[in-house]
Structure formats: C-alpha cells, structure tokens
Amino acid sequence: EAGVVQSPRYKIIEKKQPVAFWCNPISGHNTLYWYRQNLGQGPELLIRYENEEAVDDSQLPKDRFSAERLKGVDSTLKIQPAELGDSAVYLCASSGGGANTGELFFGEGSRLTVL
Amino acid sequence: DAKTTQPPSMDCAEGRAANLPCNHSTISGNEYVYWYRQIHSQGPQYIIHGLKNNETNEMASLIITEDRKSSTLILPHATLRDTAVYYCIVAGTASKLTFGTGTRLQVTL
Image (cartoon, rainbow over all chains, first blue to last red; front, side):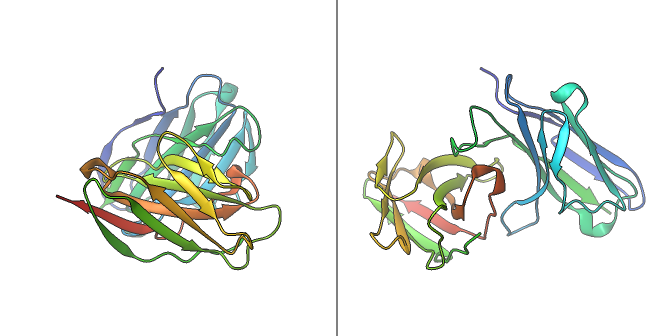
C-alpha cells in the first residue's frame, strides 16, 4: 500500500513568489494534516481536514497561506507571496480508523527554501 | 495539552536497550502519551501510545509510571537504524499532537 505522497520534494524560490505543495493521503484516510517544521524544531500543525472540511486552521497564517482539499482526497497548500521566514519543511499526514488509533502517517515532506 | 520534558540527546550502543525518558507532570486524566520518531530527512513515524497501562508492540515498549507523570520508551535491542529524534507527546487525541524538540538518539557501534 502506498504511503502519503508529497510533491515537490524540494523547491527553491525567491521571496515574494508563490509556491504550492501537493499531498495525496493514504487511500481511505478521512483526516489530513499539514505541518510545518523549522530547522531544529518539531513539526507544528498548520491545518487539519476532516474529509473536505477544515476543522482546525487556527495556526494557519491566513494572510499568505491557503489550503484546500477538494473532494476530500488530495490537498494543496499554497503560500503567496513567500517570505524568507517561510523556509521550512512542509509535512502532510493522514489518519483514519477512528479518533484515537494514535497513528498519523506522514509523507517525506516538501523542503522549501526562500531566497 | 500537557507539556513534556525530554533530554536533548542520548547515546546508546548497538544491541543494547535504549531507554528514553519523558516527564509529563501536568498530564490530565484523559490524555494519552504518544511516541513518534523522525529519521533524518523523513517524516515522523508513529511508534506507540498508551493511557495508563504499559504497552508493547513490535517496535518498542512504553512504560508509564503509576502516577502517569513520566514514561519511558524502551527500544530493546537498538540498531544503527534507530538513530533518530524521538518525540514524546501528551494529548487527548492524535488529532492534536504538539511536537516539541524531542531527544536525539545516537546509536553507535
């Protein structure tokens, strides 16, 4: 069974440019998460979807970040315009099978460098 | 969610047991203890979780003290591939995991 797939793995852009990351969760997983991980830090949650509904986006910087999960499957996270401080690894995760199986499945992440 | 305290780094000889401690003195009665690890350049990987009782699976054992204020993750026979950052997280549900900076475990020959 395929895991969580993310693309691109690496992206280098200049500040003020837009960038988008794509995530395909594990088939059948209703819950999808986007995390951001700064260098030397643990991941921090940006947004959580239950099917196509964003149920927790309190940590998403809404002035420049947006996300969508059309049809409750794939998801896209967009940054426009990017700032130097947005350089980080953006991780997507999915889970299914009830509220507390405890297990989130993470993708390998998309590493963003803003110059 | 309750905060956790972990040592920033630990070393372990290959083949020996790795015992990773975690303090969570403010844990609430309905909060679980979760352990994840992150190998370099990969996403975090779930290891184990528990509420009150000790838990064991094919990867590790989780020992939670009776007062639930601390726990220990045990890797019974550490290998080089266990070198990673290990995160101890306390949360009421896996949908609200807050990762700290974890413990960097280095397994050596």
